[in-house]
Structures are given as C-alpha cells and as structure tokens.
Image (cartoon, rainbow, N blue to C red; front, side):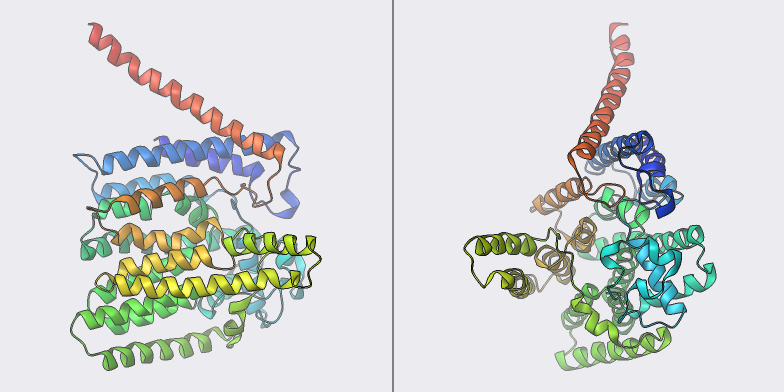
Length: 457
C-alpha cells in the first residue's frame, strides 16, 4: 500500500509537472507545476521506502513468493499506466520516428524536423535534426503504432507505454527462471530486477524502449540456458536490433554452448548464422535499410554527464585556459579512452567469469553504460537486470547491495519533465522528499501507538 501511494502521487504530480505535450506544459514557476513537482518527489520517496522495506522482507525468514512479488509489481505500476510521460521526453521522439517510418522517410538520415507537424514539435529541440539511433525492430514497432494511431498523440503515448509494459512483463517472466539456473534466489531477483524504482519510473512511466530490449534479452537468455541456442540467438539479435548493447548477449549464447560440451566452431557458426538471418529478415521487414549501422555513432548531448564527457569537458576547459589548440580534441579523445577502457573491462570480466556467463554479461553491460559516451539513469538497468538474476547470493552479497544503492540514488537524478534542474526546482524536490518523511514518521507513530496501548494493558 505504501508503494501504491507513492506511484499514485507520482501519477497525480505528473499531471502538472511531468513531460507533458507542448501545448499543456506549465511554466515551472506556476503554482500547479510547483505543487506537482512536490507531489512527484513525495511519491518517489514513498515508493523508494516501500521498495527498501520490501527488500527486508525478501531477505527475512519468511520471504514473499515470486508470485506475490509479481502482484506487488502490478499494483505499484497500475497508476503509472495512465499517467503522463515522466522523467523524459524520449517517448515523443519514438512517436515522431515511427511516423517517419510510416511515411517512408529515411529515419536514419533525417531527424523529426523533416516530418514536421505536431509530432515533430513535441521532440526536444536538441534531437529534432538528429537521425534515429535505434534498430529496425523498434522502428518497425513504432511505425506500426503510428499507422494504427494516425498521429493521435494520446493514443500514441498509451500505445508506446503498452510496448514498454510488454517488455517489463518479459523481464519479469525471465528473471526467476534465470535466477534458478544461476543458483540465485528468484524472489531477490524480482525485487532488484523488476520492482526497483528505476523500472517503474523509466520503463513504465517513461516508456523507454530499453524495456523491450531487456525483455527480449532476458527471454533469449532463458532459451540459451535451456539449451536452445538458435532460438536464443534469434531473440537476442532482435533485442540488439532494438538497441545495440544487447548484442553482447550473443557472447553468452556461445559460452553456454561451450559449457554444454559443444565444440567452438559449430557453436560460433550456429550463433552467427542465426544472427545473420534474423538481422537480414528483420531489416527487410522493417523496410528501414541498414542505416542503423551508421547510426551507432549518433552524437550525444554536449551536456551529457557520462564520465568520459565530464572529464572531456574539464580537460577542454583547462586547455582553453592555457590557449592550447588541442582543446577541441579533448572530448573525442576521452570518448575513445572510454571505449578502450570498456574493451579492457569486457575482456577481464569474461576471462574471470567464464563459468558464469550471465553474471559476466550483466557486469559487461554495466561497464558499457558506465564508460560509454552517453549515460542516462535508465541505462543502469542494462546491467542491473542481469546482476539481479545472476549475482551470487553468498558469500559475496555486496554486489547486490551496491547495485540496489545505485538504483535508489539514480531514481532521484532526473526531474519529472525531463528538463534541466535549477535551484528553485531542486528546493521543491527536497520539499517533496521532506513531506514524505513527515508522512512516514506520522505513519510510524500511528503504528506504534496500538502496540504501546497493548503493552500497557
């Protein structure tokens, strides 16, 4: 009930402070927007508290069953299904790109500005002239949705959220199965991998396509663990044709075949053939061509707060202060260094964790997110999803605790309209959290009062 109260506050606050359509946006200084922002952060604090308390139950002597945890997820997610988009405007880009596919425009060459009209106006100015960075499977889904909704914004937003919810459902179905194969606790895997606030905020409320990528990746890994390598390769390739990082899952498919006693050459050939056929077929069906290969280097925001971008900007500022001609090279060099660090990290992870390929895959995806040229809070879910299912329960439980802490912190990192923060809005967010603390304290006192009376009697 506490988590439901949290998501209900999120949904209600989002009605005035969320990532609303342009014609419905309120000035951040307006009373309604301010109250909405306070409500969102109050709800976020309540939801996070409920999640932490649920985690204690999962680790307790009488933990809830996976079925009960799935029911909790459904209850918590319910208010967010009808809420406006929260914490990002990416869903508007998805709809505009889908409309471009439906109109047979080259979505990799042109940005939504080429489409024009109301949908293009909803896209953040930074991305209106940027080609799509997504694969043909997702663009085919977005194009089909555009054809059904005919540009109607409310129907499109709801449809895109339904696609994300399908992805979350696939994740939820895969998590306990992967956990059992890996010797982990299915209930703990669901708590960390499906019920954590990042999933609810960014995959359900934000309707990010990472949900369908992770859902397909999870189901593909279930097939691989069940010794169905062809089906696994097909599903994971489809996931990679939504967003490219999922392609690392193909390494796990090959390693799992080798562990099952298959020789390297047949394992590589089987996986490679299934991947190639799926890629060609999916690209042909989508009709978008192979522009997605070139889209892998889509430029990132100049203000992106990835580690390499932060170091790059700091280095550039120092070089500019020294009047060096090398200043323009600072950010590209740091991005290349980040790619090199990622490559080294992947080699080390897979070498040390060869007997545990799913866990190695989770850590690898976490490394890609951490050292890549762009990062958003929901990128942490790439690795968190599989770490939740495959991290060892004992003796090394620190990885789960640290991952949970990261999820809790990142849940607070983005404002509900997806815009930049300023001092006034940060103060409102803090006020929302303070309000939640007061509510929780009063609830605690109310719960203690009957116990005190009973003890006196």
